[in-house]
Length: 325
Image 1 (cartoon, rainbow, N blue to C red):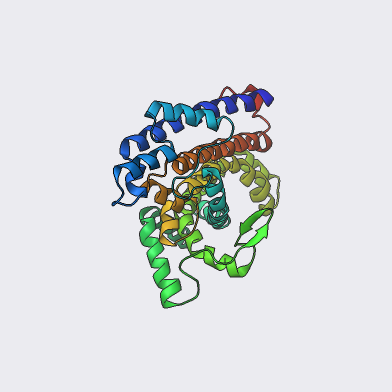
Image 2 (tube, rainbow, N blue to C red; image 1 turned 90 degrees about the vertical axis):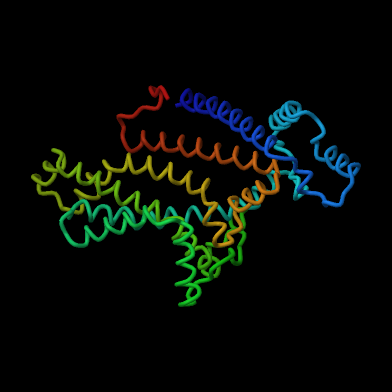
């Protein structure tokens, strides 16, 4: 286990290095942040002074080496726009993105797995066919269009839920969260549904496919022959065996939800990391963009590590100490 974790951490360091280099080089080529941040009426002296203040007066390779030196001590730079450490700016927005991702994945899991189980156990029923048709629609509809339709229906026409913003927050476990009470949770319902739609469809189809494959195997037939209750066959034998591929997909999709919630956050004006990084890209706020992507990569690695550990719990045949990857 220890060797496996250390190997993953060393791989993470390499991935972070490559990510930072690509993003740094890309933003360096795109344009000059000074041209965006200062007034168009500023003279050349003011522009040069701004470049020195932001550390942009040095060659690109030297800026990158200084960035690596500071990153080794946990300093990913100071935001050009906010004038504060980039990590501090991102960590302020992170709870909003994490709670939105949690709502989306909770909807996907609590709705997707039962519907997938039903569709797999009764594939010829009209309800199962309707479930699969809805899952195809969930794959096909663009996220931005679904978000606008949700706003039009539930916020504008019916007036049941708010359309934009995050709502009031409460201090919980050191973070400012809005979903711990109803006044804040109702703001997360529409963006949560919008973000969950694609993941929900994916979980439904994967669960159905796994159920159809496993119900034909000998261990299920043997359990039925023993006269075990249907609830035990489904809850203990079948569900446990289909959870490994489900855990894989759910873990990876959790990372993608966190990383790619940008469209949903933009539509619903949700003040999360996705909206922050979009604004930072337009403003060429290099430290914030680099810090965001490095944190996102780190989240993916941690999630994958947790998935591998869950493998060993769900299936004793899996031994992390023997894993090569």
